[in-house]
Image (cartoon, rainbow, N blue to C red; front, side, top):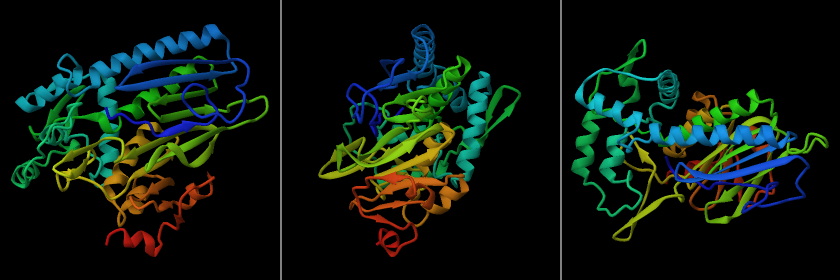
Length: 355
């Protein structure tokens, strides 16, 4: 699962930015998991209820990290990948089936630009390791991988039994597993009757309700500037039930002989993508937002709006490497304190990014 620190909660304490005093009956906790720090905030509830939900979510997240980490040999996903490589069917838990089917639909909508079946490509590049040493794979190695071109749509089910038409499929859900975790945590809060909360997984957010429902005060979220991650490039006001997820090439980059490689790979070229510095997506469903943010990064200037439409994304904010910004009309209406040259999505500046 990719580490990300992409949003500032302007209205929260700790290492995040603050705009004003915290409301009463606010409860928070922080814990490490998924290779990052998770922060949970619950407002307008009693401490006992908040702490109970915090504990449930923390336990669930640690279990998810164990079972869904592609390279953890004791995890369920590793066993699934081994079975696929052997050409053997394997029975999977119901949550895995639901998530795979949902991810298949998202991958189809993205024209397979987002495809978690490329675990073998991630391994080929060495991006499955926390400490990349290089060298990058040769063109011949990448071409050999492309001949197998595994896709998540190669998978199919009989009941809970998973089958694969392609033994080269190796699942790695680093591109949208945090979205799943955000959605599952939101379900726990709602089930406990907590209507105002924030789940923050290393900067990926799921927002419930308002920051202070007594004064109808919404949450204010700052989007990191890829060129200076300590600063906010723009802010977005959020209330209700919404997810904000960002994917960026600046989060993890690798150097080899003077060349920089992003950790985000294009399945159609077997090479890293570098069209955009970051893409931020807002959507009610965090799994969809997480998947789409990666897909739009790969889609690039000529395709990102079409792919956003296909994936049902109405709100996206794109930052180019040269500092120019682009936003869908619905997202542009929500942005405040924008610190970049915001271009219309269909402008000549957008087209010039292909040059």
